[in-house]
Amino acid sequence: SQQGEEDPQALSIQEGENATMNCSYKTSINNLQWYRQNSGRGLVHLILIRSNEREKHSGRLRVTLDTSKKSSSLLITASRAADTASYFCATDEEKLTFGTGTRLTIIP
Amino acid sequence: NAGVMQNPRHLVRRRGQEARLRCSPMKGHSHVYWYRQLPEEGLKFMVYLQKENIIDESGMPKERFSAEFPKEGPSILRIQQVVRGDSAAYFCASSRSGGNLNTEAFFGQGTRLTVV
Image (cartoon, rainbow over all chains, first blue to last red; front, side, top):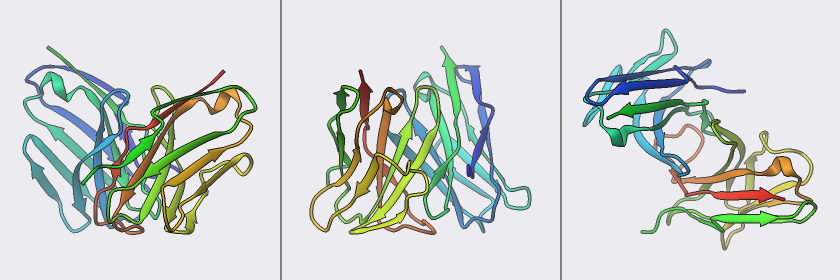
């Protein structure tokens, strides 16, 4: 069964704006990861947040985790055209399960 | 240290033929995952392997599909008697550890299978 589910399914914003994507999951986790996929390419790891962490930063990325609500959010600040991609969350089930992703389009 | 290598990048097969997809994990990685992705969709888990062992194959169809990760050599995803519905991108990922992952997974560039 699908563990992480991203929301929204698609998001279009102007370059320079902030983009926020959400991920919900069903069971207890030890960590949650966010990945990016450019069209036709493999996934690239962005950030990992552990269950005892509430927030984590990496460059223009900010990830939050709320284990009580079983949800995480990914914020990309000052978006750029190169941020156009699909973004997936993955939880640490035995088999590293992904959601269906959020397709982010940055409009120049 | 080369990344995860998948080959071929593109594979065309006629209905009924066999497709063999290869994945060489990153050096030092003993855990391999295979995923299938249809256009505009997410990654669907197929199988998780460690060296010489299948840990979880719950996402893999029971018939025509098989996977292995031998002691030596790449992991192989084999699809026998392919049908048009098997057309998809197949991605492999590897990680240093598995289970309750504390490390990231690295993905290959995928093999795009087209069944004609």
